[in-house]
Length: 116
Image 1 (cartoon, rainbow, N blue to C red):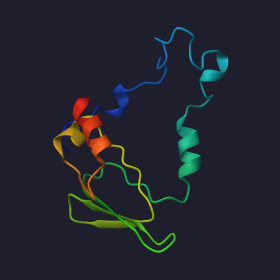
Image 2 (image 1 turned 120 degrees about the vertical axis):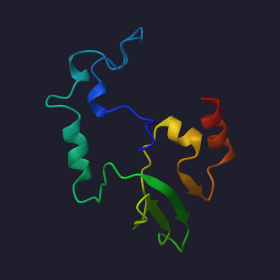
Image 3 (image 1 turned 135 degrees about the vertical axis):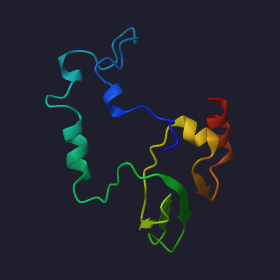
Image 4 (image 1 turned 180 degrees about the vertical axis):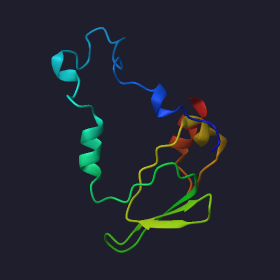
């Protein structure tokens, strides 16, 4: 671990929009009874989701029609192939270049990461 993230036990959505003057999605409907986790769990059924895996490289490749995809290389050397991947990396990891993207991220994304 590169130490550039917060443990989930220290993150909360209970007051995520507390500074919005109009409350955003305020009111009794803004919290999901039983927690938001059940939504994610339902959407994730049947997907190969990996937790606590250090990723070193994400390579996107194109193919005919829907034949393109991704290869994700982990720190242990395992290569995971798929049609797509979702990258949830802390900004600090992106800024330090801990994850290699091939092809490189667009200029706009690279500039945005550098500016934050």
